Length: 505
Ligand code: KIV
Ligand code: ZN
Image (tube, rainbow, N blue to C red; front, side, top):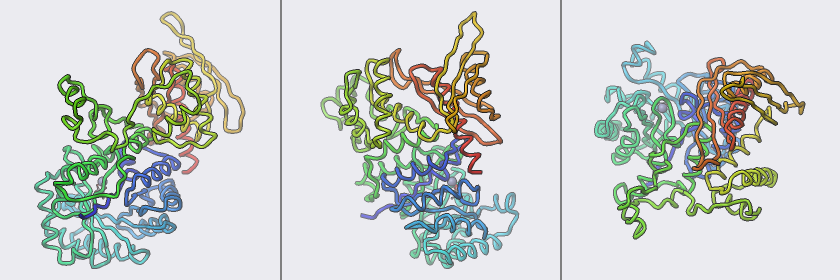
């Protein structure tokens, strides 16, 4: 059975999704989890695009040793040199060179002839090849490029040393049959194709990214580029979990395998959602909240009698916790620790102690603590580890007659205690204004949403906000049983990310 190389681009194309900016520590955390998941290649970033991207690729290259660490570069000498600098310390490394190939891009964007593009592709692959063996080339917008021209480019870049040639459906335009035919044409018409792995990179503008990727596998590709939760530019990329589980569940059809440890899927999905602020839709295949929940009586009856009646996958295979044991006020350290382990968390002693005391505080306010509460609580703890300003206290007064007022106390990075108060149009506005008076960074609030983590009046409220500063969007999250406190935490979380990003620029 052939193996499919899983090339994860969550940290590059995924991070290109509007509002999905991650800081360097968050990228490292995701990269470590991708390593545990067993992806073969991590596309860690586009080093020439910003100093922050360069640093994060370099850090991941140093720290994450099992997968191939790949850096993206456009077909430009400086971009390739920078990509090399970023990945040179990796145990396994790759440079991925891309260059538009469709007439639409050549005429309107690059204003270059096909011959010029072919030369650029060839010479830039040769440049990357001087640095390392593993070079990937992508003719961007391949699905809207005349096939004959793609054959020529691929032949030239393989001769120049490309070891993987990747066929992107950059704008998500292709249909499965058409895309499959393009792949088949490549195998038939590129004379040196057996010297390279053929890969695909599909976008989801028409909701066909996974279907196109799977069709390509049937036609002979052996690398798929994808992202966790399908995040990415515009409507996103092909979703890793859907491709992997389709290959596994329908092994009878595909006769293929991957190196993915599928039991890590759920945890990876949660982490990416948490850190990017992109909520997973409930009906999302594999990792959505409803993916394994049966509502109709007939289905429930069937699943109780025999799960395979309505379940084609065992939720345990993707790492969805088997039991949803409820903890409470009387649960001790041991029970809490065991539950954390079952949910896949291993916290340092210091972080565990903090999480345990937060758990105890929560158990005083909330009768039953479910897995979702615990996930939210751990995420909240993780957010506080990297914070610059810490929210110490919030007090608000509001009501239909009162003037919404907030008093806020923060701990500054140097340990100084800062306090101020402000009036607002409502309690959240007042809290934000009071924080602004203390932190003093101008920004615009572009999104604010509240959801409850679990059911019930005592549920934890989770606030997601996005703020914009100098054209960059920062996401912030906060969780608490009091939604005003959660809002304050979320706002400060976004401000902390903004401040951290400013430091690395
Ligand atoms: O969508 C695309 O074409 C890309 C390339 C850089 C591979 O992301
Ligand atoms: Zn892309």
